[in-house]
Image (tube, rainbow, N blue to C red; front, side, top):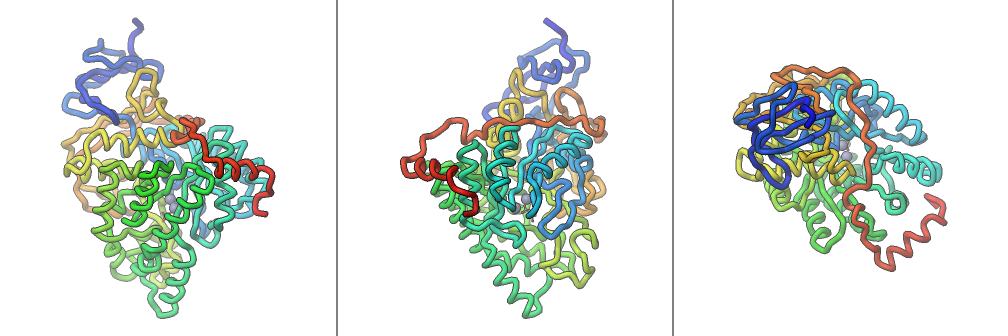
Length: 490
Ligand code: URP
Ligand code: ZN
Ligand code: ZN
């Protein structure tokens, strides 16, 4: 037998389905053996007392992306991927965002080139579709899906990004025909715009009114509508960043009748509330994201959804904007809640927060932790078992965790370019101490050993929900069949 390049000994190996004590042998970037005891490789790590888990996959993060307001993220592919790696991630999947008038193909090409030059960990990307023209839907999107970009996000809110219901059906039809997974930002734009207009007219401009404008009913209604629209064509759909009990219930109800509907939530909906936006002056802008953090009852409902499997993914929705004129407060203390860049950082803290608050407090077990942070992302987005698994033949993407390491979160210790964290001062127990990407130790003992651009693009296969093709009903099959003969947007 050939020697191993790297071996990991005496760790507690944890996957989304089991856990056991053993050794892992790595050769040529892949897991070559898992056994109770293996001979030492050229390099070897003693993982006694530590957990050996698949590297995290963060399938919802914004990197080097222009927002709907035209604001560039604070993180580029380098800073974001470094921060992700320190947080135990080995794959990131952000968004190549089309803005109206853009060629999707050009946007994707530019995004891919930047990623290839800078990312220190493996990556793929989703598309964001805001301009579903015939050129986009009939040519550019199908070609990108065939090239392995098998998911895309669409918005029901933000004036400059939203699709109307007819456009949503158009993109869902392409997803059904080409085999892609649509991800939906579900908030009712008119409800938000109506409330915001009246708030501003009445002089309520502080960040906390962002949470008032983004009423939970706006999310609940749009979530139900997105699910219904997906049901017209019986296409799988992922509802991203679910923040409300009603949104989670809509996902559960659809799943209970066998619809291929999936949901994602984020740490800030589990750990923050709208009260966090209520700080002096514009300080609350640091907690301003869409949908906004809600209330303790919503937090509890989301924890239960993670426990029950009603929600499938825990992503960061890392949307990095600095608390200065480049991001959160373009007009200083005169900035209204409508002018603040939406989003908050979270790539590096996503998994430690879930580990500490979820596993540490007995809300979820280790298998659920791996499923929610890694394996389910790989399955949903067509990367399993190359990613998200500890199995012979899988990429050797591994995070070794010290379950007892206590860390007080401070923005100076994080590696993104944002300059603050919404979790400043919060203590967590459990942290990834060694991170291995395709067999290379890239983070160890708080140090990075990874060259800019070493990450590889992962051409993704069929999303998991499409891998077991289900026959559409005759009604949906007929509707799908007539779509290719119609002009998108007609
Ligand atoms: O507020 C957020 N989440 N900003 C990022 C864009 C999005 O909708 O995910
Ligand atoms: Zn969104
Ligand atoms: Zn997002």
